[in-house]
Amino acid sequence: MVSFSCCEPSGADLARPPLPLCPEWRPSCRLSTGRRRRRRRLVVGCYAYAEFGRGGMGSLIFPLLWLSMACVAGPLFGVADAWSRRATRPWRRYVALGALGGLFGSEGLHYWLGLGYLPQAVVCAALTFGLPLLLGRILKERGLSLAVAIPAAFVTYQILYGLLDAVSG
Image 1: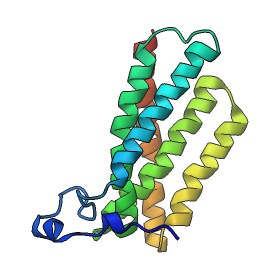
Image 2: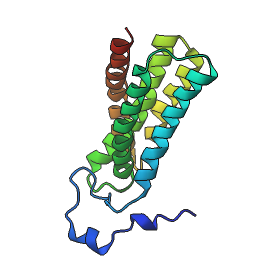
Image 3: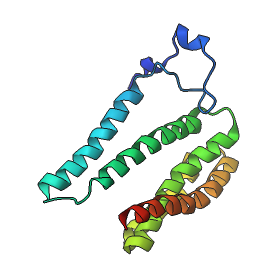
């Protein structure tokens, strides 16, 4: 069993008011720093392999773009993770579970519309519908999370791939 004792509130943390977005998060938790470093190393390693192992990747814009997206999306999904587990307000759980499903939905839309990979799109669609239904605690939460996931998939697809299309040409 994994111990998250570094995330337990200390005396100094209990004196501080909770953060408005994620009251469960404590500034003393050292796990997020390691995750950020690991995320940066993965992105840099992926593009280093493309540059040196496969004969070149082209522009330096894409590694910087993906690195900045990872640094934005990582904390957002960290907050969504905390909301999905320990949120005191129901709408936060709906949004968190819907965001997770919406992420896979946007990937599925890209596989289907952008790349024409139907089998991958079907798997992403199953995850889009399945995750909110499986992770929801009660029937109302499952339905509302699914209702959030579907528009979140389309909005995420438009924003993410619109940005990538604008940068690439």
